[in-house]
Amino acid sequence: MQTLPKGGSFLFETTAPRNIFTPEDFDDEHKLIAETVTHFLAEYVFSRMEEIDAKKEGLMRELLVEAGKLGLLGADIPEQYDGTETDEICTTIIAEKVGATGSFAIAHGGHTGIGNLPIVYFGNEAQKAAYLPAIVTADKISAYALTEPGSGSDALSATSKATLSTDGKHYILNGSKTFISNAGIADIFIVYAKIDGDKFSAFIVDGHSEGLTTGAEEHKMGLKGSSTRSVFFDNVNVPVENLLYEAGKGHVVAFNILNIGRHKIAANAVGAAKLALDESARYANERKQFKVSIARFGLIKEKLAEMAIRTFAAESAVYRTGGLLNDMMHSLDRSGPDGGRITAKGIEEYALECSMEKVFASEAEAFVVDEGVQIHGGYGYIAEYPIERLYRDARVRRIFEGTNEINRNLISTTLIRRAAKRALPLMDAVSSVRSRLTTGIPVRKDAGDLVQATKDAFLFTLGIATDTFGDELLKQQEILGRLADMALLAYAMESAWCRAQKAVMNGQSGAKHKENMANAFIYTTVEKVILAAKEALANLAAGDELVKMQANVAMIFQYTPVDIIALRREIAGEISEAGKYIA
Image (cartoon, rainbow, N blue to C red):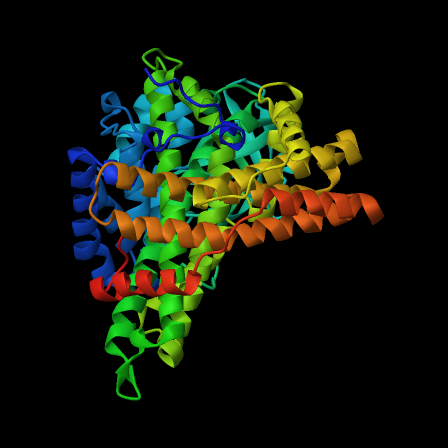
């Protein structure tokens, strides 16, 4: 049986292509789920986008109910509570497909992901039995209430309080939450508050409780059809049996839920990027200037190609992570009453990968939708065209589930702390890179070698940063950010490379197209890695010492460039011929 890799171990281990999950590995169940979601969205959601964005009364609840009839709300919920309990690949597919819908994606994710997983993973049997069946059918819609006006990324500084009543039967909840998705339609809130002002805890709160009120709908840049409101708690009585997990353990609930939430946000981003590319490829084929389809213009080809390349890399990273999470879940004994907590603990192993894919995929989506507007020209600025909505809806994904800045900090600090605890032998890997530098690193021969070069550059820079700052490195955000960029780009590069190589080895159709996209991504991205390393090192050293370090970076990245222009032309040709994203 394949040994599960430790989270972050890809940075010092070689990943065999056969050991990563790719979309080409979908089985019949996965394909059926994809087809079901596609048909549902076409019939119920995409056909009513104007009504959704206009917040037609009752429509979002109606759509969630219809999704529930098809089993699309219970994918993470055990069958004993009427869920479909599919594998993590199915839930990733669902998240990807709904990602392109914008407002519906937020309502769906707020209800099925962060809105129910706290109960799935940390609820007791009575709580699961009371709430999960109603979530599966959307008889009750859920919302996740963590953010406060004064505590966004710093969730533990929340000021909402819960005090035990004199008869010991209720917690009396006071405080407020802001930017809460689904707040206007929610029947259940997962609320975080401090018991006695210091024990950060999670509660299941009835949305119709006396003293619970919501503010007016926020008028947002994008996602206009989703409900986003502030929620206020004025002496709200919450039965003591509605405390989730344990008093003072709310951070365990919140942070574990955010791990899987980041994975699903990344999948959402991939789905939206694909639609943006589909719309742009179709428009470029149809739009003529100077009596020629603009898809034939070299600079438009470059745009279409790079949109496809980044989408391919993001998709590869997302399904690789989905495979890791799926393998982890299947390796655990989750049969007992603590099965949910065991699952959450298992997912925590890949918190790094979840943060990496979230940052990369949301930023890839941002690039794709922006280029999509540019390809559409003036029409891209007109609401009649889907690309205009996709552009607006994409912006918040770099803020959701922890800003990308927070996630970059998490990536680096988690790696450094795991290394300090010897949970990851990163410093041994640093020593190995230094040793190889003294004997000389050979010229890199292909894209796979450049993936290794990126890992080497990360380890080399980490070693210098650790030598320079020691424990104070955790306070150097600019250095942490560059280390995180090198690590997450290594993950995306390796994911794309392994996917392409697996396709070649298996003789899959379209393998050459995949290989082209992987090569183009790696050979262009490696220059970003070099820049990140050089900027970090320039802050860590000066004079002759810096010159020596820069020479080491140059040695790590000795390679012969490839013809990126020709690669992009070939990739764009495939996309234009298909009139949509293909991999």
